[in-house]
Length: 443
Image (spheres, helix red, strand yellow):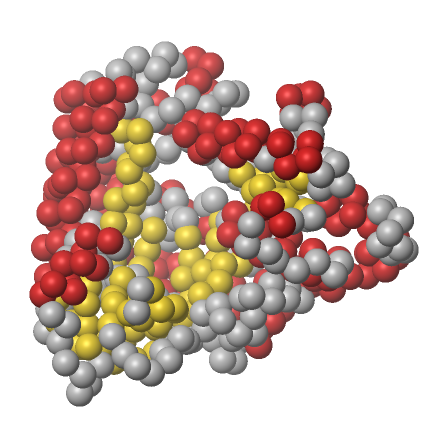
């Protein structure tokens, strides 16, 4: 979501005549887009923000914009006192405060109606930043802002506001605009993406939207994330199975494998509910890959309860598990009512156990691809090799003298690891073992 928001603000700035610069020291405007889902992310943002203060002291005309979840939707009065060197505070997904601030600069001499016209153009028909235009292969489109589910650990509803679905026409127009600028794959985003349209009386469903976006000419692939077990229904699974452009990859977090912990998280399902959902997904979409999220060390989580999470992952053998150690977020129910009683050392121990488990499981899953030929959409070149993804979102590297950016190619897999695979195009030699080990370590 923050990647999409950053593209939007960069586009808005280019409409005002700015262009990207590689270093903060050279900039006239610095935008810091923040995430506060975990304490470590907020700490990093605060540290980086204070590191910019000397630049402001050296150049008072420098404009610093703090944006995103750190600001939130309720304003920035407390932040103004703490960060008095920041000029503009922008809520998530909203470049307008910065656009308005810059347009008030008399040296720019932009009338208010001209600012509104340019912003409306940017919002209704997104133009990618110049450095990404006709180079970006995979892009993100937010379709649901905010969240109204309010899991006890989650700060998103407090920072991004209540659930708000974007109009279908606006989403489709953005998809068409991105395709015209070279994008081949689009990921539809929402904190709970399968609740799209549920905040609108008789609104469209995510399945409806997928069918409409599927008709965008020139678009090769469609993905969506993140789903919630409670709202992933048969209609959505049928749509994924039927539409060839919608990739067979589902991200549906379980968060924990113990029912009491799930209840304390206010997730609204049991471990067995999740188990049955995974069975339904696999039955309807053969060959699907499934990703999940796990929080270890939630308040009150005992060793036995953690073991149930470990056992569930061992049983289900999912393709990806995004792991996080619990950290209390101010204002959330868990922070207010539940003591953070699992020691950090124990959180790390549980984290590493799951990390090792997933490395083994995913390594075994990916080994089935060895010798197989899969279709890969190539995104960019990384250290001399082309990087792309399979329909199931597996990362693949190949060597080629040809520019493969944006190309869909059949690739034979010659090596597999837990985090990536290596392949070759027809007629090209297999990479050496040394080269394979280098990719495994660095990527």
